[in-house]
Length: 177
Image 1 (cartoon, rainbow, N blue to C red):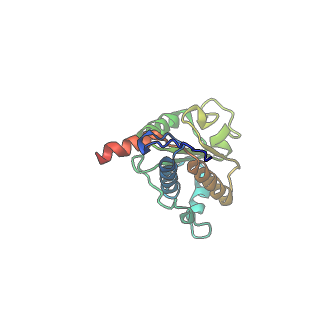
Image 2: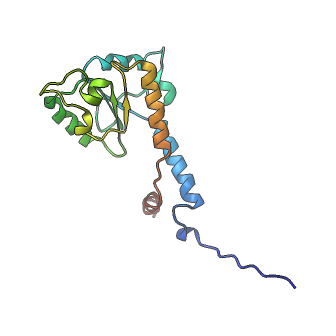
Image 3: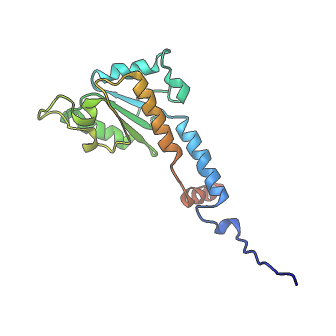
């Protein structure tokens, strides 16, 4: 006597986020996003010099797909706040952050940007997370270029783990139709 097994088959339209198509699409989107980061340097003090060193040939930020430093918020997707931010500058940083298109990320570079550093005075913002959401903190005063590269690779790892799910599939279906 043979046993009969029934197998339930779903059409691709009925698959949810765990499906093959969505996971492959997530991998493709994340790969392209993480390997084409365009930083917007907000060089506010001495940490900006270290950021400039990262772009030079000795450290070569271009190996990680982030060599295109843009000074226009509409063309950049990673804001790198390097240095001491005052409340007067915070309004400008917020305006630039709002002008950046999605998806966007923020890196806080150095002790002054992350926590106000040694400046415990009324005009200095005690951490840029009071102004814009921060995705990654790089410690140091100023941080070495190696630390900035490590932070960049950590941000790339975070981006590669993002899940876009069914909303991206729906947008692609609308674009094709």
